[in-house]
Amino acid sequence: MQVIAPGITRVATSKNDNSYLVEGVDGLTVVDAGRAGAADAVLHAAATLGMGVVRIVLTHAHPDHVQGSAVLRRRTSARVYIHNADAAWLSRGRVPADGRSGAMARRYDGLAAGQWTPVDADDVLTDGDVVGGLRVIHTPGHSPGHIALLHESTRAVLVGDAVFRTGRLGLGPAGFAADPDSRAAAVARIPGDLSAVGFGHGDPLIGQEVTDFETWRSRLAR
Image 1: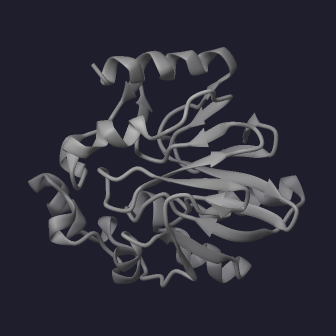
Image 2 (image 1 turned 45 degrees about the vertical axis):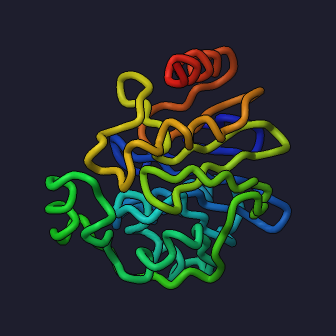
Image 3 (image 1 turned 90 degrees about the vertical axis):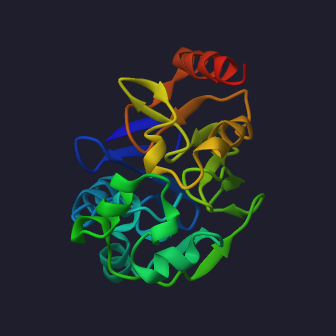
């Protein structure tokens, strides 16, 4: 567990994957449910915080972010939210064949490891919505309904897979994205003046480290 901003805790659900717990007056919002076995780590962290999970907000419908959703919802009765452009994928239990730009990624989606127990969202999100104190920023490219989430009270942002920090900042493998050419424009939609940046994969940027994100983003725009 790692506090990245007041009221926001990172939970490393595996060596490479992160979920986040966001505290609210009504309980905890889980941002991304992780892989199939991630629920135990998320619920242990919630118990440590002494709060119950009331909602699950998914940045996008890829297996490493949603496989844990069915178990987590069953164990908490939390409501599940996702952008409307990814809701059908979540309900289907896999990324469709046209949902990836690369052949290797499409083959992965055909394996059991690339699929999940279908989940029907309790509500769908669109750009500008606020849920659990988080402002929805539509950042399509990695998936059609990918979102980043701005915690307005602290100016921390959770970017899902819009940006990866695995060794260094980057957009991630193009073949695993639905529309790789849209990703840079999506990143430009994330606001500035940030206190922290949390990634689906990799360590967060906190405090002065956030300047690394802005420097990288300015280079991306050139």
